[in-house]
Length: 88
Image (cartoon, rainbow, N blue to C red; front, side, top):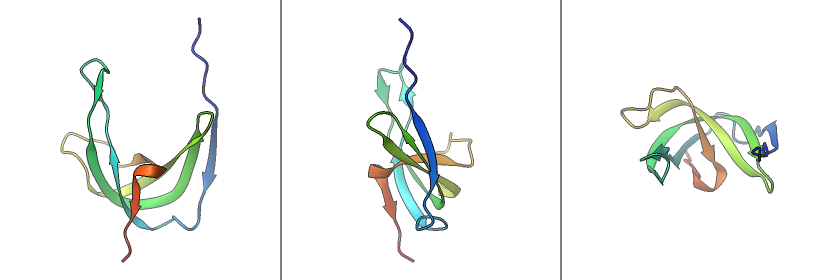
C-alpha cells in the first residue's frame, strides 16, 4: 500500500519576519525508534508551511546563533508549538 502524501500549504507571516526566537527540535536516532531534543536560536524569516491534515504549522528560522554542534544546515524548521519569540 503506498504512503499517502500529506498536504502542504506554504505561507508568510509578516508579524514573525525578522523576530528573534528559540525553538526545540530534533531528529530521529537509533533507526528512527527515538528522537533527540535539540535547542536552536536565530531569526525567523516569516515563511511557514502548514503540513498534514489537520495541519501543523512550521516556521523557518535562519541566522542561527544556537544549534547543535553536529547540525550543518544554516536554517531549521520549527514547529509552532515549540517556538518561543524573544522580545528584544
